[in-house]
Length: 93
Image 1: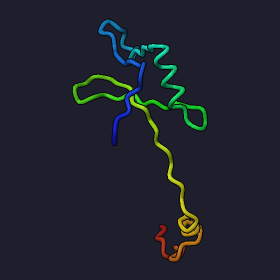
Image 2: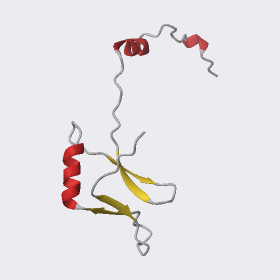
Image 3: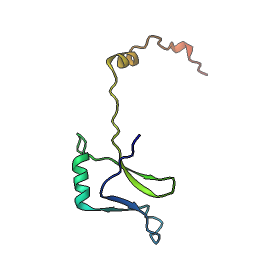
Image 4: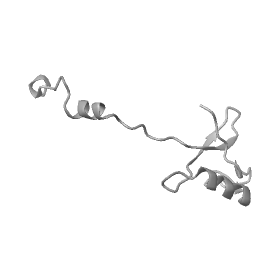
């Protein structure tokens, strides 16, 4: 899977930051606004994951995951399985 880095968003953690500060985000506003416009989904969101590289550096990656649609046959199989469970086959104490 290809990493799609987020233009105009920079992730870091200042060394002098208190323990309760997890990370710092910096936005290069004009660049980030253009990125948002280009990557906003049909529900109006631009989803971003904050990750850690193997070297320990934080970075932002576009999360463009979309659920797959189940076919009608898959849904019918879940609702009407060919091998239904017989309640008497389940051991209860």
